Image 1 (cartoon, one colour):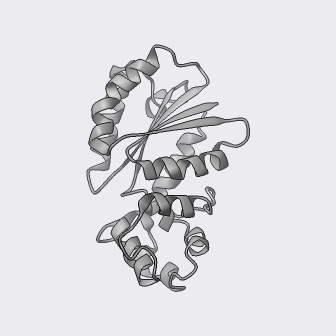
Image 2 (cartoon, rainbow, N blue to C red):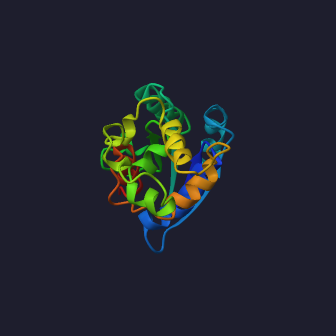
Length: 200
């Protein structure tokens, strides 16, 4: 199997270049394509999918990943599903156990929630982080961190002496994703992403 990832930013591409081989296993290949934010991806997605439709082999999958960014997750998913349908693709959500080429997934609320879902990886990547961070109530559900996921993670990292000039998302992705265990993550949206990637 080969997976084409369509992503809204470079940090997601860096993370998935490290995570995809762990999830897909040996023999599978992937390529990450990132855009200049969510609106850039959404505006270019219809034409990109139409282009894929003209040549895509049966063993290819297209995975579209967007951050929720405190928007309505269901509305965003519906929009992605409609774009795929207009381009002539069957998605995982529409396939009802049959064949599909497109998997649409939402990171709730942002990719940083996936990092918070693997505290062990965070501690290995950033050993000066507070030891009681994992026990705090606000981080028990990484998809529902109040006040913004990346902002909360940035504050914790800065308290520990990392990223004094502001969170460097690409560097963060590289350091944390390299340590992540895809099978033990506490983020529900990450688990849904993994199930979509391994479906079929």
